[in-house]
Every structure is written in C-alpha cells, then in structure tokens.
Length: 246
Image 1 (cartoon, rainbow, N blue to C red):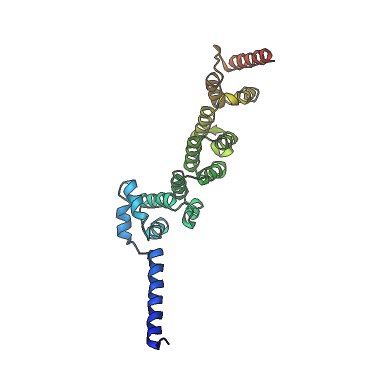
Image 2 (cartoon, one colour):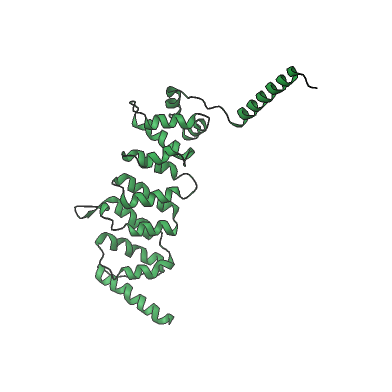
C-alpha cells in the first residue's frame, strides 16, 4: 500500500511537471520598455522587425502606435507599418486601417502590402473607392499596380472617373496614376475594349494615355493627328482587321 507521503510527493511532482510543460509551450510574455522600443524603431528595417518578433513585441508596437503620449509621427509610422508586417491579422492592424488619421491608414496599408495574402488588395480597392485622403488613394494605386492581377486592373479601371479624383472639375495626380497603371497593364486581350473606348467621350488626359497604349497593345501604329483624325484611323484599322478575320 502506497504511503500518504509518497502520494503527496507524486502529486507535487505531477503539478510541477505540468507547469514546466506549459511554460515550454507558451513563452512568458514580457514588457518591452517604451525607451527601448523607440530606440529599436530607429534601427534598419530588418533588425527592427527581428526585435519586435519577440514576446512582448506586438504589445510594444501597439503602445507606440496608439498611445496618447506625445510621440513623434516617424515613430508612430514605423510602429504601425511593423505591426502590419508582423501581425497582419491582429485587431491593432484593423484599428489602424480604420483610423481617423490618414497617416495611420496609409502606414497600415503599406505594411500589409509586404505580406502575402489578399488583405492588401482588398483594402487598396476599398480605399481607392472611398478614402478621402489623396495620399492613401495614391498608395492604393501603387499597390494594385504592383499586384497586377485582373481584379486589381478592374478596380483601377472602375475608378478612372471617381469623383474623389477630381477637384473643381480638374483631375488630380492620382487620376493620372490610375490611367497610367490601367494602360500599362493592358495586354492584347484588352484590345477590343480599348478600341471600344474610342467611341466614348474622353477628356484629353484619358485620350492621351489610350492613344499611347494602342500601338504597344496592337503592334500597329498610325501616323496622324489631331485626336479626331487619330481616333478615326484606329477605328478604320479595326474595321479592316475584323473584315480580314471573318
């Protein structure tokens, strides 16, 4: 029969063994001082990210990004981008993407753009459609251009005439960026749609990029101007091409 003392000792050993196992599976979270975190954010990007991968890193980044203490914009920016790169699915990143300050939304978006997955495209499309900040929308255009998927191209095309991209009837620079991206991403399969666009009323900025893209996409060129004559030459060429292919 087992003695009471041995039973107690066995129980104590069992409890300590379980505690040790849990400690090895779940590293203890630690607090990183604000001073240390701020100094680390001044390091080159790779060293900065390596540091904040450690336990307590996410908490430190959140504190700097959202603190009410007087922290300069550069540190907030770097903290938010690091947060998005290292912890893209965290509540803190979602909070930054919906923040009232444009630079927080922009920093979170730029951080997400370096992470694999659809999040950066999803948020870029959303921001391009309705974000009030010109800088945030410009960042969205850059990200969608680099992703170069059909979904990204369609989103850019749909926002060519977005009213947010005009001021007092004149196009802002982001609209020029959108047009450049759309036509740079165009391929031979887009040729029918490009030709069809010639039958739509186009402003000078739009027609310029369209006519610049047509020779590259089609492998054909026309030597005429102004726009009305050039437009007619392209439509005539397209009609002849369709007739030959019948």
